[in-house]
Amino acid sequence: MRNTLVLIILLLAPLVVQAERQTHTTVFHTPSAEVESDARRIYTVELLRLALDKTVEDYGPYALRLVSGLSVRRMQQVAQLNKYENFFFKVSYTDQVAEQFTYAPFPIEFGIVGYRVCFVAPSFLQESNQVTTLQQLQQHTVGQGLGWLDLDILQANEVPTVTVSQYLSLFPMVNKNRFDFLCRGINEIKLEMEQYAQSEPLTLNTSFIIHYPLPRFFFTNNNNPMATARINEGLKRAYTDGSAQALMLSFYKENIEFVDVKKRAVISMTNPLIENIDKSYEQYVWGIEDLVFEN
Image (spheres, rainbow, N blue to C red):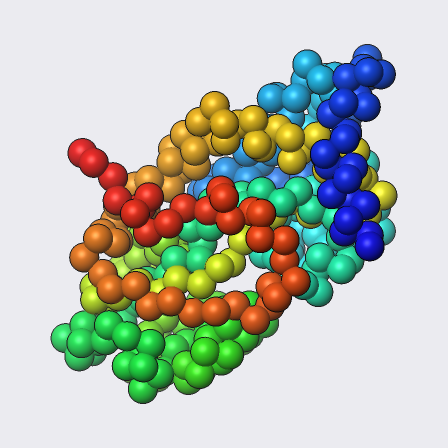
């Protein structure tokens, strides 16, 4: 019932605000990037700013303020307490998270985070490149961080996993064949290769790419439906005029090209954590064909 009411507000809010246009500055908050090289958070901030820019005429001026020092868990705590005015944070959708927060149903990275390619040890590369199906992958082990959503998804698809509590331990462990694959999003694997290949002689499997739906949205406290409507409207406008796609590619095109998806078999998996999701977001999700660019 609450989701239905939120959807109604998202649809009607632009009309209500146009009729009673705001003249004061609306303040928004969002987590900052902790380091200059954190392209993922920088992109998130810039996409939120773009959505706000697209809606100034209808909703009035805004100020976007950045909040530092927030882990993903802390972001959710801050949003739950409504500590900051119109605090929006990015996180992967799960049915559990959606029960606690309101969100703008537009996938922030167009779903590309759900495409995964895998690090392997050089000694395992040739054997790894024989894998092209889910059934073959199920005969191998995949390393995962403790608490990662991917862990639940892989296990639900009957892929054997090895859980590691420390993120940085994953790279030497795959190199030492403690598990066979370390799979990462196509938006991040190039940077990780550059960061860790110096100390660990890692290489990339080239035979397959994993795909499962893993949409990330802007979430906020349930008391912010009008602000959510503004963000959602701004994101849709940016998508319609192409500026959202251009922004995403300015951050991630090089990463996507790096994995050369056209030469890989697609291993599709289901995500049991999104059974109740409104699938209207799928109209904005990029398919595998969208990840191949003409030079």
